[in-house]
Length: 482
Length: 110
Image 1 (tube, helix red, strand yellow):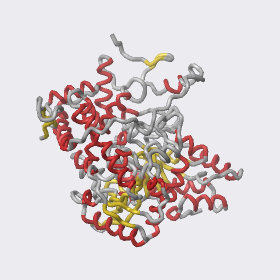
Image 2 (tube, chains in turn brown, cyan; image 1 turned 120 degrees about the horizontal axis):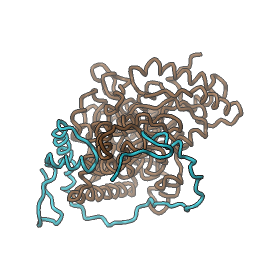
Image 3 (spheres, chains in turn purple, yellow; image 1 turned 60 degrees about the vertical axis):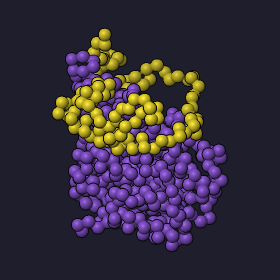
Image 4 (cartoon, helix red, strand yellow; image 1 turned 45 degrees about the vertical axis):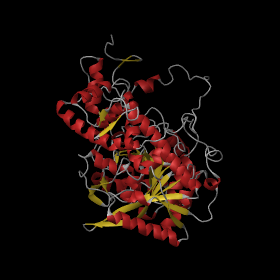
């Protein structure tokens, strides 16, 4: 039986499975046929799990028992830094070659409980460090819209898989834009939840104060459905929040209020330099569309937002240099042996971490070292607080969401920025703010830039106050319809 | 190039952003990374450029924001109901590159 994968959404699949229009197995096999056809070129998946038929059987049983819920039988792709018990997980790094996850990440546990299906693990930049998946030890993921361009990163494999109909939706992780940037480049929806909304247990840590797991999907509604299943307080992630965390003490009355008319803030000063003209044009068109639905577009000033990227590229490598200390060739993964224990460490880490990982470890070690700690790390922490304060003021003033383009350019060429790390980092200019401040942000497809006859997707980013994903979903759904 | 000091305008100025090769050596040693000779110069240049860019936060002299406890608090659980000894040993040890019985094997430390 032939299922038209392009038209599917989670709700449509759920209804079709309820009505027995097709079985879970037929659905899964349709995706696998697409994967076989397209994955060799795209390199979105690193591995297709061998137990997919078993998973399909289990999900079908749930349906047959009449116990199915919205995500039962939904085929998902999982980023390679999220642990699924008994399956390999490598964070696309050589240093984890042979590593098999000994437990389920909390998000995986939750998805297993409702009978969702994991088709395989997706390619990424090594340990989620990068904006193009070119830092994967297993080759770059290509953009489904143009094979000479990157799919974005670090969750590039997940984004390409969903965009090319190799999964209905996917999970990724976002430390500075790693969900939103690849979804913008591939033309799908990506959500970075409020810091603490989703448990990080079982996600390989990159920047612990910035990381969040989130959904990549074809529609805002699909992203919302997945978010509502994976979000929760978790006793084994002490940074997770409850629905009450941001309800009373922290949010002002206007932040808590249900808006009668949405106010969209636009930080105009921030939108000039380095942004491609076609991106700016598309952004203005998007704003006009929202205005036509009756929303108010308001210019806002965020005086310190221009320092977000600097603060981010200090705090993040500092946390990386600490988090990656655990990979030493002793406890797990691969090992290169030297003449003594110290040489074991030096060789294993020096040879099995990729270039970008080594660069960020050095950078992180520098900003944390005596003499530079105050000038860099401490300063960045102060700036982080200032940016969060600026945002709070804006949300207090009645702005419901802040709009920017998701990325300053459409998907760039493979190889274009790989030898210029600073240029690569600048691709994150609009996305890092949400991670620095811990607020939720969503990227929704907003059209295309035409380049040499190819349609390159663009993304529109909305950021809301802490815990207000609901506003992002509501505006996002309105935006999708126009 | 950006120069800063901690004490306002007085005190000793030091140069941020310009890295020496010896510094790369020192950082690599601290981070337990073996760095190839030919890579050192590239790293010096790249890390130097990144530091120069992120150093722009030096231009900002924030009034040190008051230190306050974050909204997200650490949560401790009661130290009780331990799992059975050895319950996870096999599955965790299975990932160790080298082991003897139920021990991880490492080279001599002292």
